[in-house]
Length: 356
Ligand SMILES: [Cu+2]
Image (cartoon, rainbow, N blue to C red):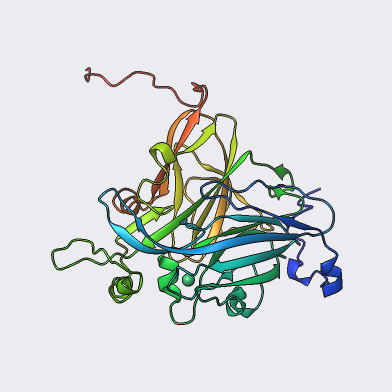
C-alpha cells in the first residue's frame, strides 16, 4: 500500500482536545537537556497515550568569544549555549517547560515555540524578569523540527541574533517514514544552530568589545540594519564543530542532521556526501526528498536531513554560499571511520607530471 502513514489530509491539530482532569492523568517524564551538538536520549517510536515531558532551561547572558581572533559577542543564551539545547518529544505529547531567568541577568526574556499554538508561541505567557521563572505547557500536535526563540516585545531581533534560539523536534509517534511509508531510523542525531552575528567595529575597523550587554545594544542594532553579518557561525563560534568539536560517525551509521536558523536563510551541504532523505522545511508528515546535494533552511525554521555514511574520511558540513562558509565561519567537520569503498570512488592514477 502506498503512503499509509503520510499525508492523510487531516492536520494533526484537529485531534481531540483533552480536559484538564484528563491531562492530569497523563504520565509525566522529566528530561535532562544536553549541550549541542548532542541531542538528549529519546525514543524514535512510541506507543500508548501521550505523555507530559518536563524540561527546564536557564537563560544565561554572557560574553562569548566567537572567533580565533578573540572577537567577543555579548550573548544571550538558553542554557549557556548557541544554539539552546534541542528538546525531543513525540507528536501528541505535551511539552512542559520551566524557563528560569537567572538573577544575575540584566534583561527580561521569554520563549516563542514555533511548534506551539497560541499566545505568540507562548511568548506572551512566559515573560520573565531576572530572578523569575515561569512554566508553560503546550501540546506538540504537529510533527517536525521547529525553531524556538526569545521574543521580548520591542527587542525581538536583538535577542535572537544574540543567540536565543534552538530546536524542538516532535517525532511522529510511529517514527520517521520515507514517501511510501517505509520506516527511516537514525543511529545518532546532531543539532546544528547557525547564527548570523552583527559585531560592531570601531573607527579603526576593529571589532568592539563591550563591558555589558546593554552597552552593545545601540551599535549592534546599527550593524543589524545593514543586513550584513560580520560572522556566520555554527554553534556559537567559528570552528566550533572542527578539531576537538568535530562531529563523529562510522561507515554504515545513519546520522540525523538537525539544522536551525532563526533569522536568516541558509543552504546546508555535506561535502562528499548527500542528504539521503531531507525534510528541508522540517515537517515530518510531508514526504522527504531524496539524494539532495544542497538543501535550504528558511530563516525562521529548522530542517532535518538523514545520511548513511558510505566512505571514511573528514567531511565538511557547511552553508554552501562558500563565502559565508569559509570567510564568515559557517562550516563544520564530520570525522568518519571505516573502510574505503573503491567501487564508489577510486583514484585511478595519482597526480603526476603531464604526459603526451
Ligand atoms: Cu531574550
